Image (cartoon, rainbow, N blue to C red):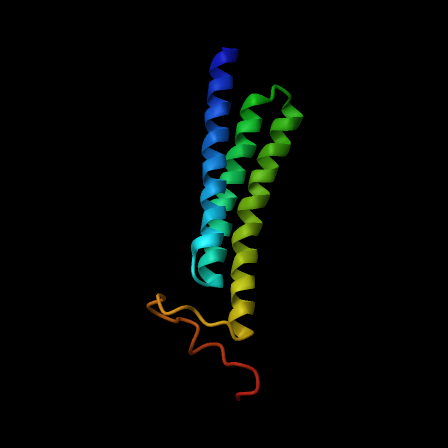
Amino acid sequence: MTAVIEIISGTMLIIGALFALVASIGLIRLKDVYMRMHAASKAGTLGSGVMLLAMAVHASDLAVVTRAIAGVVFFLLTAPISAHLLAKAAYAAGYRPCADTKEDALAASIRPEGQD
């Protein structure tokens, strides 16, 4: 049974590391702050969450499992909200989406400072 748990946790670690790699490549390759933030928040959260769950599977202590699950819940609750607020602040500061963005949904709702 120990070998099965090690294989499962090792596989989860590799999957989580691949998602973290995709997030880091997205930070380098994508065009504007909004696309980069999307890659970092979605793939980064998924990667770190899967790696924490791998640690929970590998650990035999209930306290470690509880802390790992609490960490996953914390990531899932905070990363999307913080990415949304950072993107809204960047838009309000004047950073506009790149030309690849088809629809600018915030154009009508947020006006730049000084325009009333």
